[in-house]
Each structure stands twice: as C-alpha cells, then as structure tokens.
Image 1 (cartoon, one colour):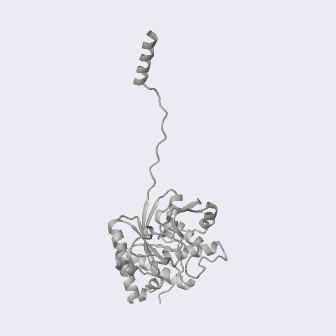
Image 2 (spheres, one colour):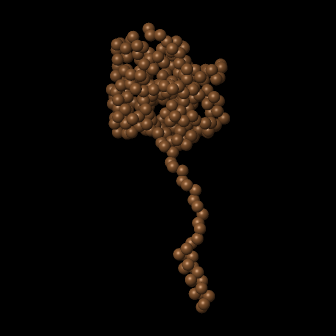
Image 3 (cartoon, one colour):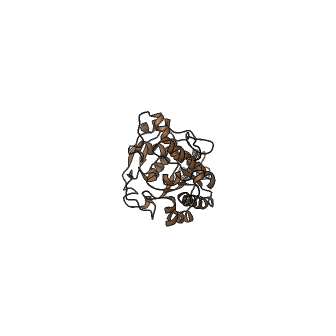
Length: 287
C-alpha cells in the first residue's frame, strides 16, 4: 500500500514539474507568393510561358500564381477593349503585370511615329493597364519582343524603352534573352519557324522573367511543369484566363525538366540592368 502511495505521489510531482523538454526548431516563415497577370498573344502562350514561370517559382521555393489573357495575334487594344483583363485587375491584387504587344504595333511607337493610329491605340492600352496596376503598386513589365533581324529587334527595343518610360514601367527584354541564348550556344536556333520560340528559349524566358519579377537569380533545379506546352496555334480563348480553360490548364500530368538541362540556360541568363531591363540592347536612331 505504501508503495502504491509513493508511486502516485511521484507521478503527481512529475505532472507538476515535467522537467526539460526538447527545444523545437523555429518554423521558417512561409515563402512570399507572387501573383502575376500576363496580357498578350501567341508570343506569351507559346510553350505556355506562364506555366513555365510557375514551375520555376515552385522549384525555387517562391510560389507564383499566374492569370493570362491572350489570343492568337491579338493586340493590347483588343485585350483592353474586351474588358476581361481589366476586370481581373479590378478584382484581384497583383505583384506584377506583363504587357506583350503585337510586334508591328510596338514597332510603330518609334518617337517620330507616335501620332499614327496603331501607336496611339497601343499607347492607350499600355497606359490604361499601367494605371490600373499602379493603384495596387504592381510592377509593370513591358515585354520587349523580337523581329526577323537585329535591326528590327533594335527598333522594337527602342520602342519598348520609350513606352516603359511613358507608363512608368520597366523592360522584360525577351529579345535580349534570346540574343544571349544565341551567344551562349553558337549555332542554336531559338526561333525554328522564325517567329516562335522553341522550348529551350521559352525556358530561358521563364527564368529571366522570374528574375525580373522577384529580383532573385534562379539556380539549377528540376522543374515540374503541370500544364501542356502549348503550340502557337492552340485554341486559346480571350474571355477568361488560359489557366481556367479546359485542355489548357492541365490534366494532372507532369513534365519534368531535369536541373542538368536548366544549368546551361542559366549560363545564358542575360545580365540585369540598372533600369530593370535584361541583356544588351542595340541602340537605334529615330526614324
């Protein structure tokens, strides 16, 4: 009986003073997630650049949520006038908005050509989207696309810088990234049809865009892509994000790109410039 009372007393005392416990490791704060709106045409959705961007973010431990309003050959004016991207900007908060204009319309915005109709309509759309983005402090990235030759690229780059200055944005120099790719891999052809990027080029664009949005330089890690790599002639509708369209959003299948294939692309990653642009751009005189 005495033994019973002694054990009961001991258990009682232990309950009052359980003694030292193993310290728990501090919980790391959750990684910041970025919400990105992309507005453009087939230059934006070929090989599903938004899905590649999301995959890069996941691999780097930085979640990225994308919403993409695009249509084959569409212009920013088309996307502004249909109202769907603007409505998204009014309903959701974004960290960045990527504006990709049709190349011919962007090239029309050379300084001495700004009174022509294509450029006037394009600038109206740039300004409208940028003003909406500014109300929520979202970064505005002007997608500086590419043309058939270096002179055309220089003209597009000049126009993109001009537009970015007018709307208070910065440059996502996609053409410069492709040029860096060619320099890093001589003999490569990132535009097999002369217009649309191959998968390697699109991966480099996604890596560059990730760096320009987050300010972080990516490292070589496996990518898990959970949406189809869309061809340029995919049946994309402009009335809702491609991430919400059956057949475009993905069906659960995962495409894995190993880190060994990402590493050489990082060697081609264009240098970030102080003005927010990427890579080297050729200067061209006003015409």
